[in-house]
Length: 477
Image (cartoon, rainbow, N blue to C red; front, top):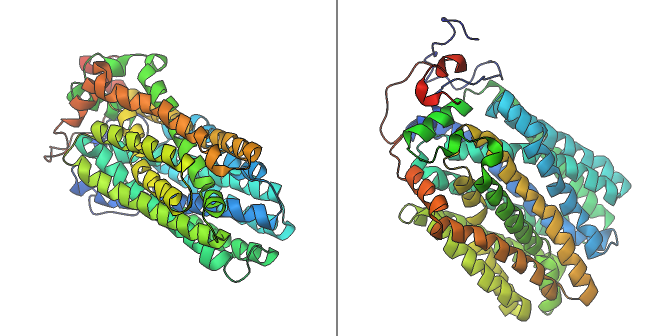
């Protein structure tokens, strides 16, 4: 329990770096009510993380195809990279990453994730020396563990730090930076790894050096986060926010296992992410098979262009959300994803590739919007709920192998894309509920209409959770 002298906040508005404890506790910090200006520095710092995992994800899609050629493996076996990468996510978001988040705080999880990513990047070196696909998968699993920790913390942090009305806008803008990273990854793969050396052992040596540079950078960034002063949002903060936004139904006060809307969001995330990853993973295969005279390097360039459409979609979708409710934008975009992804199954050549590029454009806002909408109004369960929704990323380990299996059975990647289309349709059911089922729609709209954080409020003294329990309005926290 905090003593009377410990519960007074230290006014350090101009302090950006200092050594301080990683343990936050469960006190009211008012970080969920910060104004836009007060959140600029912490959100800028966290946005850097989005670029990191966007780069890692984009690079993974490029390596998937080139490893098929360099190491002589099938499409089905190459999906082991995606299985290792995304299979690590639920272990982090439901296990150690979420435990650290709930017991220490966001900053501690950021540091843990960066350290794990750095270790995984270093292990890429011996995997490259031995030309071991299993080694690459093992290193990728550790990188995925680190990135799973970062996503477990960064996505809800973007959503809850600052005015609730702009939660979807903040997370989509940050994810737009992530999309830029997914563009850089394929470009680097095409013009640095495999341009001069082709699909050869020499290209793997270039991969080693790039991952070594990544390791050095993320370890440095972990040190920056250790000394950075960033606001922490606690469970008590979110319980207070749910009360102030009048979400109704006492949703945030129910036991976590009765938060069934969170689990539906997690299911939608699993289906959507799996479908998105499957399309991106085999985009190069699709291009080389259906478009005449298309090499793997050119296919990677086309993938970079598609990821560019993805990034543009994130920025434009964020702009649209300032005028139209995010749930409506989400439904429209996911509907268009199903339309154009279905068209790519039957089309070939430039038309088919164009259909996939448009598909990636409309996929852009779906992932972050599912996260933001899924945690709206759940109060003290926000950290735990976000962990379950992020765990849905494990779909990226499940759907690509199914897609690859269908593609190998019929010797057609285009036909294999029937699988992600089906999963997109399953995720679409959640978008329909968000827009047409009152128990979903009304809570989301109440939080979205809140004026919290839009006007600077008088700072409130931080208090221990034992003191909060004395407040009848938070009696069940």
